[in-house]
Image (cartoon, rainbow, N blue to C red; front, side):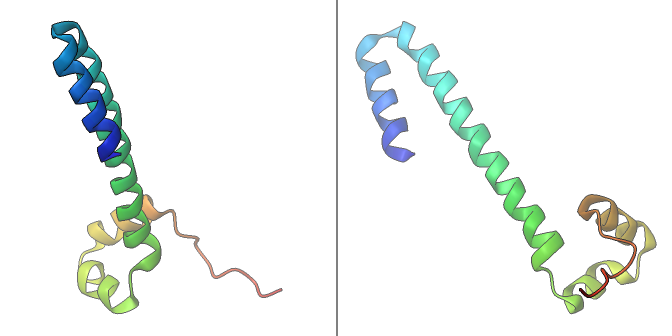
Length: 83
């Protein structure tokens, strides 16, 4: 990713102002991808990797926070049946 961005930036510097728009678009797209990946990782951590103790410390004492966590993480209402 860094190499691609550096190459685009170098090309833009050598081509003048017209290339600057290309660089802005490329940086925006790569930045959006990175932000989406960071959000997905944060949601996975919050919803799937959190320990029971961490959940209790963060949400058990506040019904609104617990409800928000449940809405974000779409947790089932019951434990799945064993097969």
